[in-house]
Each structure stands twice: as structure tokens, then as C-alpha cells.
Length: 149
Image 1 (cartoon, helix red, strand yellow):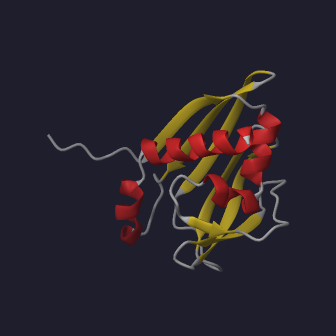
Image 2 (cartoon, helix red, strand yellow):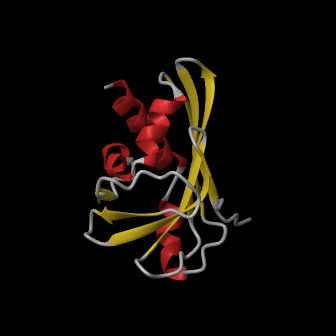
Image 3 (cartoon, helix red, strand yellow):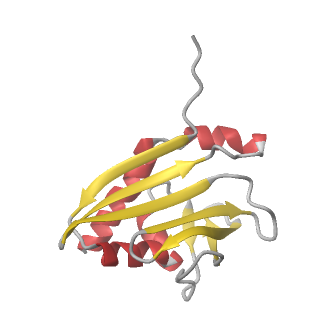
């Protein structure tokens, strides 16, 4: 029996860093290329630190294309999620989420989620299907390494 792949992919890991340090790295788009496990982000201009739902930050992909990232969930130090789109376009329906749960003063449980349940663009499905928990874990692992440095 054929079973379609899950449209929600997650990776979770405990990181030896406090939630505030990790969240600062995630919520500042200029830091994101340092820990992107998909090797998809080339750069983001400084000064775009996210502070609320409704914010939009722009990143440049390794292929040179820009993406506007619309923040749809935000709780300082705990949760941030965005939906990317081509500049000036409606997001096609995939979401990237980071959730941080302090375990103790020096350890944070980090969950990274890619959710494409509402993806409306069939041309993007192959790329969405290719995003695995291993890709997400690579980002979490790199985030841990950057936080430790």
C-alpha cells in the first residue's frame, strides 16, 4: 500500500545553551546562514531582528533569489514561525517553526518543524518532500555548534 510522506517533519534535540542565546540566533535573520542545515541561505541583511507576529524579513538564497519571510507565530524566547514567499507574493503554504523549551538554566530542548500541509504550489512539492528530519536536525546541530562558539 502506498503511503504519502508526512507533510509535517520535525527534529528535536537538547542543546547545552540557554533559550535566550538560542532564540537570539534564530530571531536574527543575519545569523541564520551560519546554522542553516539545508545549505539554502546565503545571507540576510543585518537589522531585521524579529520582535512580533506580522514582521517580514528578507533572506537571499544560495541561488541568488530573495525570499520574504512572514512571521506568523512569535513568543519571545520560546517560539517563532514564518512562511516564506517570493517578494511581493502570497506565501505558497509552507511554514518553518522553532520552539524552545528550557530544561534547566543551561539546557534547552529545541524543536524545529517544517510544515507543508497547506502548500498550494505543485511545483514546490518535490522540494518539500525532499526536506527530511535529517535536514532539520542538521540545522539544530549547527545551531548548537554556533551557540557553543
